[in-house]
Length: 458
Image 1 (cartoon, rainbow, N blue to C red):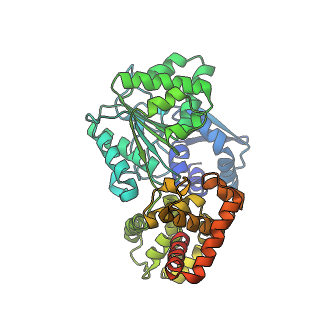
Image 2 (cartoon, rainbow, N blue to C red; image 1 turned 90 degrees about the horizontal axis):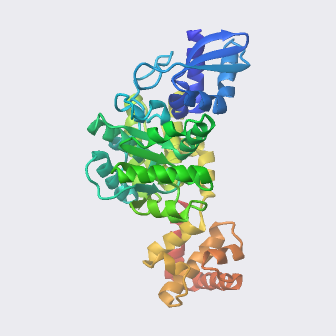
């Protein structure tokens, strides 16, 4: 039975991804296979419920493929004697303890099963710092030290794959090292909501309140997911206030600033805005190249015989601009491709292997990207792109941005007009025609437009 589960786990790690596997499936222990039912020991009910909702079909499919037809999963909660996750039945690399298991359990401590496990890969040592994230990194470092920081909460926001979750895990790792007896609770807003609803259903709301309000640091990822959930927001608000009143640190992340989260109560927005709000900006070419170089060192340590051709990393940094996850995934795929086929990683191999990613990335140029890049090039404020100013040093760059928006996106003229301060589509058409005329007569404008197109398409 252990052999069957070991083989199934090896396949599951690939199919669901290492992160999901390590967090949710690895803590399980297969105890019995009988009459089409797979029995598992799980360290917590939360893990059991999550696996049953999200990964049951994957697990049943893999067990069936390995000669054990399964129609249903059954879980028995078998807590460990000490805080932490259950020992998996398959060999595994040592994992760091989960965030909420940093200290011995006490009557007032947060239970280890209340939070989500920390990813051991997300540390400060492998977080690549650049201009777009240097303030967020500095603030995260200060919070992780555990001394007086002068702001609470720390609110990190930005698009997908810019490093918010990485920094939160890094804070928890360092804080636990610096304060071994402290209780750190890290979880997503979705998990917070799920635990709250479960406490209501089981009439254990006082236990829920006690667990969440007696930690030294509360970390909530993707807080935008509680928007519109009135009861959850109510409990989150009171939990937030209780911790701040006790001088406990709170770290929050979201995909946008508090004021821009629709459906979030004004009193919560106000509370979140009282701390330090840090925007993780889109990556620059230099930061993307630094990330690729850092990741390559790790890959080369595992596969020292692989060769990387000149210009490959620079090419990837130019072409893949969506987010860091896509960038890292592309590099991982490239190394796997080259390793399996025993080929040198050349520019041609990269273009062939990553053709789908490169095509997808090419379609992602937005009007916001165009406005930002043009404003940077002409050294004007981004607000001037949508503002009423008609001075030539503002109006001409605005027209160039209109022209590029029509050339590089699929947006209609009325849509472009709305993104440029609600201008009429005839105004957009006039601006586009003006730039088309200047391209034929003004060498400087033609060179500027050509360069901006290259930068945006890179």
